[in-house]
Image 1: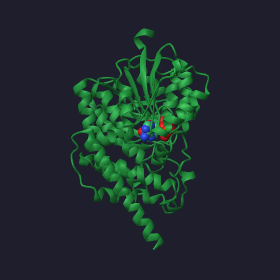
Image 2: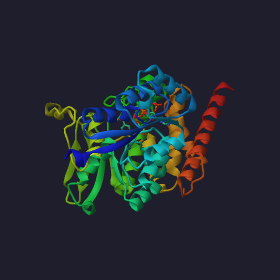
Image 3: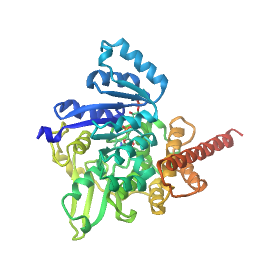
Image 4: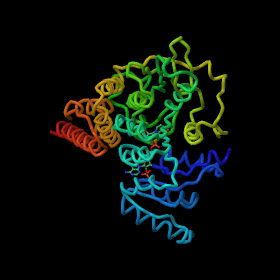
Length: 401
Ligand SMILES: NC(=O)c1ccc[n+]([C@@H]2O[C@H](COP(=O)([O-])OP(=O)(O)OC[C@H]3O[C@@H](n4cnc5c(N)ncnc54)[C@H](OP(=O)(O)O)[C@@H]3O)[C@@H](O)[C@H]2O)c1
């Protein structure tokens, strides 16, 4: 069994929340995994520590300055130079890190479109991809899914809701599925009156009630944009129309997804809020093995609640449905504008409700088209970011004028 499960990994985003959880899964099952490449951004100290522990053959950072600092860190360590991985930087190196013939499995956990090209490359090479980076499908869903079909890649969702849906779908016939239901915690402002949202701080927004994640996804959870991205991601992954995907607020985050079959049966996926379970599932599928996650406390289940989302208070969720209905480059612009607006909120440039305003206005400005390759997706992404930045600058100008 161990040999059948043995996997050689490229971890894109190894220093982030998903990346470090992935490496913890590896740490606990060293006999099952080899780490071929670690790809990080700017967190050089964490990457250096990961190199010492996991001894990859290749390590990649975002910039040449980062590479120089990584070299210093490794020089200061007692790792003999002959044991160092090949050190590289930049986008071409990220793509190269998944290309090696030795790599059979890629964990895609870079945040944002910086992970798109390398993930697309892995798909085109027919590798198994454990997909956490939801921006890959939100920005380039049509192109990526076409490549999955063409090259026979295995795209296994790591996002807990999609991972749960993947598990529920294994129980029945896809043709007899009527609905996918994704749950959402509702974020830290579920009970905050709408009029008070203009005054919430980044610190309050970063205080997610049930999950510990990177900053962008945590703010996206507070606006429910994250759930909107998940609706889009689910449509691509499982071939649903947006109208077949429902969102239900479930503050305890124990039920992750439900699949409703045509006879009215609903299958639910339930597990602790620990990303190591879906990460491990993506690595061992179709097998399972022990995971270090807490078991469900059924005494707590009597407190589980299920409520409808408030689309007026969280309009980005509605906008996500509309963009996916459009079916062209709208979702790429949605993602890019949101990333810029979230950064602006975190740096105190705009208030919380303006995240939606900036995104909606950017969508009005950027022309819609059908991207034919990754280059065109990245161009639409760049253009959308510029438009969002200009809108934020104009708002700042209007305030100071
Ligand atoms: N966290 C979760 O529980 C969760 C659940 C479902 C889905 N996701 C999705 O998974 C992805 C990662 O989320 P996260 O929470 O792990 O984010 P995170 O903690 O912010 O980590 C992001 C990772 O991306 C790397 N990165 C950022 N910019 C980069 C660049 N230009 N080049 C190379 N690497 C770059 C970061 O490197 P440095 O830190 O070295 O800069 C880090 O390793 C997101 O798309 C998120 O929506 C996350």
